[in-house]
Image 1 (tube, rainbow, N blue to C red):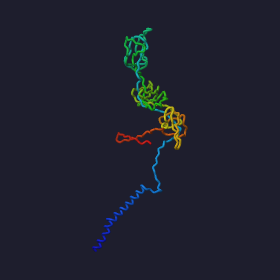
Image 2: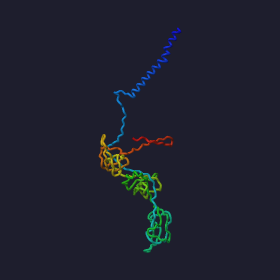
Image 3: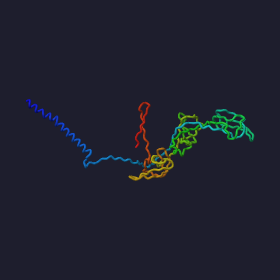
Image 4: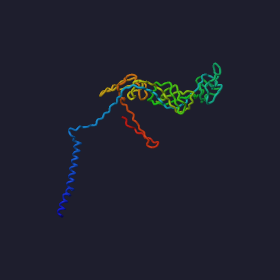
Length: 318
């Protein structure tokens, strides 16, 4: 009994210590060999899959549509600039009738005794406003063109800054604009619209406010300009055109593998996103959506990370 039990335990020990480990080594070795074969020695009939990617210039059809060129600018009410009132005669001041402060249009400012022919002449205020810097006294000699007083007119205007890139949209600026004053009266018209560009490149649009409107210097206001409108016109995105005022260049799609054709076109109304093509394109032609070298704007995503705290991240632009 004793010898039989001992002899029965030997095979179990042998299996555990030697047979099972050897079998595991063989199995794992076979798996590893199979993986190596799949990775480095594919079968002859197996199809090789390779990633393919290509970036092409998108093309769009030329369409017909409407374009309304409207521009809204934010600005402020300001008082018109002061200017000097000058004498138009040679003579001697015999009386000063005013001091610094408000005057009405036509109010007598000074009386001057003209040298020749000898007579007394009144110098009057050319318009209503406020006087300052009175430059004469009784008994003083005055001459033609000499400054006698400074007048700040009771006139106001609206001035609004404009980005220089928008100046081409203002080439055919209308004479009038619509003004909306924050918290003020109903929208009204202003006249004498003019574009101003300083020596350092700062651009603005200015218009005169009507005298019957009660306004105050510094009030924020909006200026709306109707710069043009067309209906049922040949139109393309501004991104497809090199140039933006009067004339430009577009690139016509030449089909698969062909080089695009460069074509000069005549442009019309432009709303900043869509531009009218007066001559050079026909409806249905295919053009490149972006001119060569155009960089599409990167879209920005903003979200609130805490009460009153916002974070913005730039998205991808393809």
